[in-house]
Length: 236
Image (tube, rainbow, N blue to C red; front, side):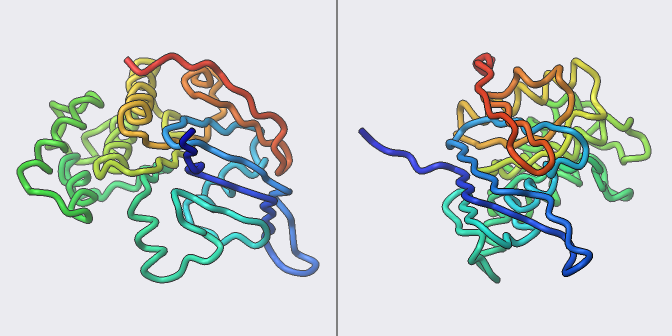
């Protein structure tokens, strides 16, 4: 039987902020495997270490102790060009959308797409299609000051997904969205996972979206408290 390596493999991972007397450990002995194409939601109280773990997987922080392998890259050893190559395979979605005020929705997504080789016409078509899927088809030429908070967040989501990343890392991506648009985003994540094998790791405290994922991992005080399957529905 063909064996598939995990998309994410974490073994004995610890992490601390500060040094000496000011040192505070925030992650303790994290062991976690995520399969390719799996949609995992991480939840837990504020301060439980969720965002720290997400940034470690995203190579925004370097592991201190333990082992962290992500989509074939040993993050303990990555440096220079290898680190840049790994990050180019990721789609980051942060709580703050950080859109450039002077760019339209289309231009914001295009700026991300321009970092990845693609025929220009195909690129423009994909941008318009993705914005349309996210309910922004009629607002492609709007700048952030003419968009609502939820619309700006959906532009940020499109910006993260336009290059078809192998791994999506999302920190409260639906926090500013209403129920309808939350469902649109979750369906898009599920479709990417099912059809393209994209792995999704998402942080949220919104219990309404838990069943959208394949697995629900709960962190409490820097430790994995539970890890369970959710029997999520198939992508529509």
